[in-house]
Image 1 (tube, rainbow over the protein chains, first blue to last red):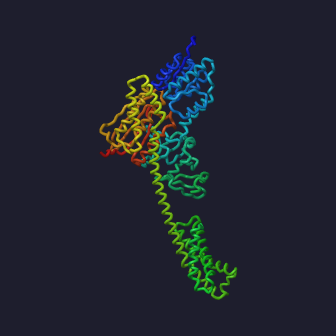
Image 2: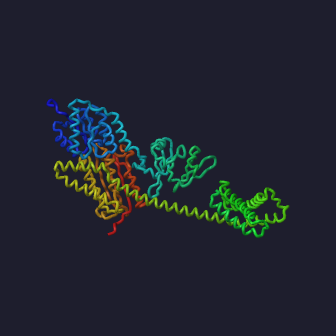
Image 3: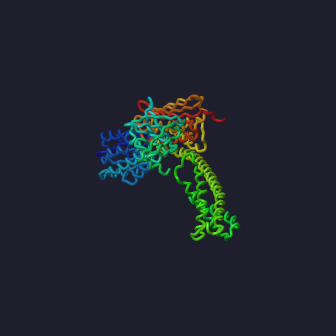
Length: 261
Length: 344
């Protein structure tokens, strides 16, 4: 060990925690030289490429590029230790897999254990575990956590400003060539309309199916906004809306939606 | 169409009528009664059939009229059927003495009584319908009350955000271990934040200065955690501090700005909180210069959606929450609600 001290990188966006981890490491593993400190995932990748440290301590949640994404860049070129405050999913995945992890606030005894394990691996020149599959799964889990919720707001330009329209307040959506007309009511009952660039088909995929129904090739209606459905001749129907004069068509292929009504 | 309650009424009415009529017949009473029951069922069948069929009626033609007419027509047929059944298929109305007279008598009695029973049933039906609707309204009201409770529950749940708590505690620990004099002040902010956040379950209305104190405690904690990335500014008219403010209104906007605007940004940004009075409405806005809406996309909204629900339950249509984008990047969120002084 005299020839070369082991090196480490610490990636943590909160400065106090970054300093604290370095301080704690100096107590349990005095030989370790912290050669790089990163404030986000992007810096972590840059510093890794510049210094090639033996060990990387990566906070899972960092602005921009996350710790998981940085870890995928590093791969098995270094021993990885993840640091997280509270992430059920992440901790579960870490515990199941072979990944080392620390939970914030970092416990000194736990850190000492981790340091001992890392020292052992470095001494026996054991290769870092290949974690690509596990990390990929983890990255997907974290992404799904934020992306799985149904659409709640739609962005629309109204005059000079970009407004967010609450999806629940939308009465109906109507396709007009490449655009979509969004008709909604404000809390006070004022009726509003805006044109957005996203095509109806793309929007439809993101809406809550129990709330919105497509009644026509170019019309999606909020079921809560329907006042009544009037059957017409020749297998069609008209949807009348609460507090609105517009009457929306129901085409033959969507009529089954109202059969039981 | 032929539920047991209806069958029961038809059976009872026709039996009673049959028994009353039987002394004027020479026949045994059970024959008269069974004839009356057959007639009763014929009337019931007509009533039930024309209740549904045809599906559409002209506007000027009420269904109950159709049903009563159908009963009147069904009775002579029913009486004929009754004679046919009780004579083994040979009614011989003209031939046997008294039979023709009996036929007429039973028909007239039926036509006298059956429509009234039918009308009675229709009136009862309407009453039941009204009662059902009343129950539905009551259900809807209790549903609203449940939603109000739900919203308050979620409010409390949302506050105890473990990620925030443990990260903040890790910072406090770091300060304590380093022996930093800051530690005491930060701990004070955390206590203020927790104390303000927790008793909210009991209070539905707080004052604006309580709310802003909470906001300040939260922002000070966040500033300790990201000193290089967060700047905040509060512009509040001091005369407004005693106004009512639904709990966690401004805080939800600020938390949202930190979580979805500042935290995802490598360079951070500024949060400006502004509260002012405009034509007896309280306007509170939170503007951040964070990453804006592009990056956070769909994650945005859990807190805001629940705030919207809370405002709606507290003020109905009188409260508004609007979001807009800030140039070059960032989000501006504004709530407005009627300005009310707290009771002294």
